[in-house]
Image (cartoon, rainbow, N blue to C red; front, side, top):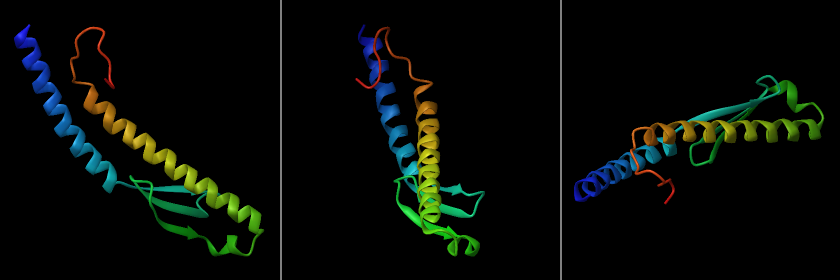
Length: 107
């Protein structure tokens, strides 16, 4: 029993170190969300900070409401991409973890 607990503690420490590394990688991640077939692009970090908004000149003269919708759709696309990449990174960490039967994360 003590040996199992010791192994579990080692796994938890390794998981914590890997989790911190993954969180740092996610924070430095940049994704680009698009809408209107690429006419509006939003670059966002893994912390959901918008770094850049690009709008094709042809869209600027269009209907204001349509442009607002395109920007919102591009931001939402970027958020989905950040969430997807974060989930992929975290699921890779959890795959090697061997928890006792009945124990689930988060604790």
